[in-house]
Every structure is written in C-alpha cells, then in structure tokens.
Length: 399
Ligand SMILES: Cc1cc2nc3c(=O)[nH]c(=O)nc-3n(C[C@H](O)[C@H](O)[C@H](O)COP(=O)(O)O)c2cc1C
Image (cartoon, rainbow, N blue to C red; front, side):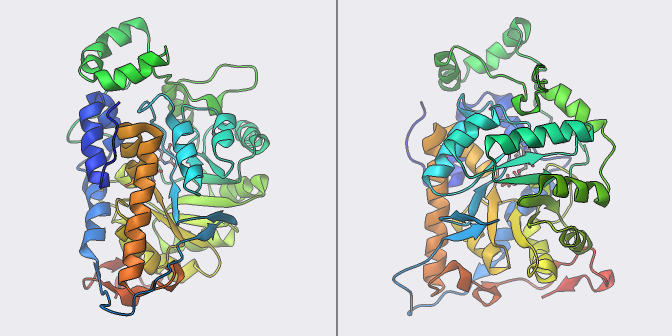
C-alpha cells in the first residue's frame, strides 16, 4: 500500500500517477482533444478571488445541507465515474468513504460493482444512466436500481462520443484474457503496489458492467455497453420526460451548460440539474462550468436544485460554487486520485480536505453557514460569466 495521509488533492494525484499502471492513470486523466476544457474547469476557479474579513469570524460554522431531500454533512457528492480498475474495492470503497463522511454516492451504470453491493455500503446512493438501449431495457435497469434501494436517478445526457486526445488515449482491453494480461504485464509489473492489491483478491480487474446485465444473461463488457449506447438514437426532451416519469422519484439531469436547456429541464420537472461538461471529457473548448453557473442558477434556481461538477479540487472551489448559486458540487477525479493513492482511506482523506477548505473559507469570509455565502464574498474578473442559450445571446456576458 502506498498508504499515508496527503495534504492536497494535487498530492494524491502525484501519488496516483506513481502507483497506477500508465494506461489506468491515463484513463482517469481522460479529457478530450486538446484538453482545453479539462484545464479550464480548474483554472477558472483559480481566477476567482475571495474578499475575506479580518475580524468578525464565527466560532461555529454550518456546512450541512440537503440534496434532493437527502441530508448531507457537507455539500460535496461523489459524481458517477465509470473507470474504477483503480482499486479492487472500486465503487464500494468510494461509497463507504462517502457514507462515513455523511454524503451521497453517485454510481455509474458503467461501474465495476453491482448496485446492490454499493447500496449496502451507502444507502444514500444515486444511480446514473445514459440513454442507452431500448425503453424496455432502460426500464429493467431502473427497476433493478429501484429494488436495490437507490435514492435517486442521475440521467447523464451530454455525451457526444468525441474522442481523440493530443497526448494519446490509454489502451483499454475488451476483456482481460491471458493474452491481454501478457501485453499489460510490463506496465503492471512496474506498479507492484497496485498489482499486489489485485493479486491479494486473486482476480484481475473485471472489465464488465454488472449493472447492465440483463435478467438471466451475462454482464456486457465495457465495449459492449459502449456500443449499445453509441448506437441508441439520442433522446428528445419528450424521451427525457418519459424517463423522469417512469422513475417517479428524485431525478438529476447531469450535463447542462445552457440556460435554455436548464429551462427545458425545469419544465419537465427535474428535481435537480448539474451544470457540467463531463469533466472536460466531452466537447473540448466548452467553457468552464463555474463560468456558466450563475446564469443557470438565476434562471431556474427557484424551481430546481442546481449543482455543479467539473474542476473541483479544493474546499475553496466548493465555497466559490456555493457563493455563485450551487446547492452542492459533485467531484470526479478528486476522489479517484484519493482512491488510487490510498483506497477508501484516500477517498475519506479527499472529502476531509474539501471539508476543511470549505470550513476555512466560510470562517475567513465571516459567515456562520454555507447558506450565507454570496457573490459579495468573491472577486471575479470582468467578462468571466457566460450566459449560453440566454434569450439575448449577444448580451452573453454578465458581471
Ligand atoms: C474517468 C472518468 C469516468 C467518468 N465516468 C462517468 C460516468 O460513467 N458517468 C457520468 O455521468 N459521468 C462520468 N464522468 C464524469 C464525472 O461524473 C464528472 O462529471 C467529472 O469527473 C467532473 O469533473 P472533475 O473530474 O474535474 O471533478 C467520468 C469522469 C472521469 C474522469
């Protein structure tokens, strides 16, 4: 085990890079094309400053809230991620860490662990689906998740199958056959810590998607699942309304970048939406999510819970998102780096860092609660905010 506490997410990422086989590390870095959005998501947070007070700080600070009716001890959720050959316990370790720290687990339909096991680790789990397969197939997957006890559905609909990275895509095998293992062996042997964790479990990463298994059938491979998704005609707003109705419970639409889309989402009655560009893995050069947040929060924040994901690496990033209208944020790579660096304890470490950083920001800004954070606490460059899909697109800037 690499073991040991780390003091920032950047530190966990360096440890992950040392510990993981290069193709596994590369799959987590992800990004697309030139990596502009991937970098911008993080850089944009750094361009926002704070306006702290010197005196008048509060001794008690309230960081708890609710998201889609679920109480959370801090406004940071685990965003669903589909590549968890990072650690043998994968999503179960992330779910346990989230439960121990009082927050919500988002489980990808491309996850490596069955939803039933993840719910056991964290009853506050949301299940994520893409628009993939026939309506009957989607119903069956939803019903399985419902029967397992998931608390809400995440529909991720922004994906547009863009691919290709200037720095090269990692090699992901269809299945870990003996031949594939032999090809993978040189890089795995250079990462004995990671390999040893898997050897202890007496199995290599299972590259299937158990939550997409048809009744009485076999779980599809990652590529099989991806093929089904790619060849499914994309949904209309009527299809999304159908999905929401079939689910009936708390429903989060993930991937919103535009105000017109946010309004359509509100019209069909979503519970929540996430301002998201899929962590920069999708259409490269889509602006950073934090730049799009205030316009969307202003437009629909009174009807829909507005979340944000993309680029959150520090508690101060969480404070900035909340000050600009988010109810909570979701994290992806931050917890993946923690998981790679130190398993469940590493994910807890990441959540603790975000909690500590958020608490410091609330303290320094002289607030007693996250609910009191507002735009007056921030310093934002001119022209920073963008209102994509607003009625007057030409007047696309606020602030
Ligand atoms: C390796 C990786 C796999 C992902 N897989 C999924 C997925 O299966 N479903 C999904 O809705 N989002 C997926 N995402 C997107 C995340 O849920 C989230 O939107 C993104 O990671 C947020 O950006 P951040 O990594 O900068 O926090 C994935 C992201 C990464 C990095």
